[in-house]
Length: 281
Image 1: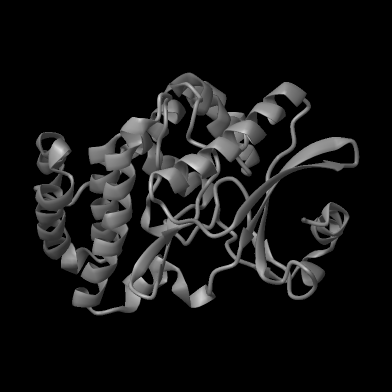
Image 2: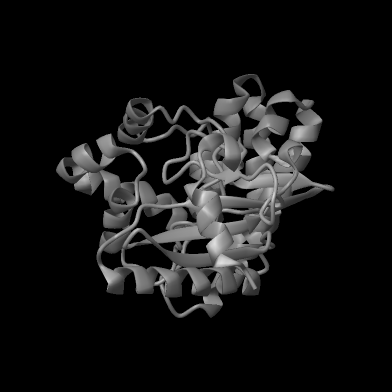
């Protein structure tokens, strides 16, 4: 049982007492790992609080359902807990997740490994994507998945997914579009975003499409290592035929040349300082 009072104390502590910030450039928050104490083996993710109690209760319910659904679909997750903490009169969503070795993050490994080694990582991440989508038919609800390179660890030859926020289950497209603004850690996004709600809403579409999640993974690899782009495109086309043939007609056209991010999302990332850096949100 998590000691919620101890968790509140860790969250209230100044940055020095908190310990290591895992990522400063996450879209929704900057996760941190306490340097000592009962949560030193955990990553803590603190999100914006809301005054809408019903919306927070729904968020908690959806997060629980999403973790359950990911596990049912065969996606391995680090141990993950969701809490709504009363902090100074405001309920704050907090995720407490088992910490993974810092050197297991997939993105920095992709940057430094040999081409052959990165293709093994892509195969491991692709296996998670294919496993999820080939098992997703069992869910009678809208469900998505955001398997970007920065949302994976690569450990002992396997890819481990760890991104559960926002919970991509039950919410309609319009509702999720509003959540992308509501829970953004960037004040600028919350200020500018409503004027571009249609474009912001479109950010999520890739996450709810089996072929687009695979194409997105390949696109990330191509941008990360442009000199190896042809190797990743070759891998993506082969993987589609082997593991995701149900979606081959949709995926293969997007794997003929290095996939590109939509221009509006590239613009948002530049404005917000999200230059493709590791994200543990």
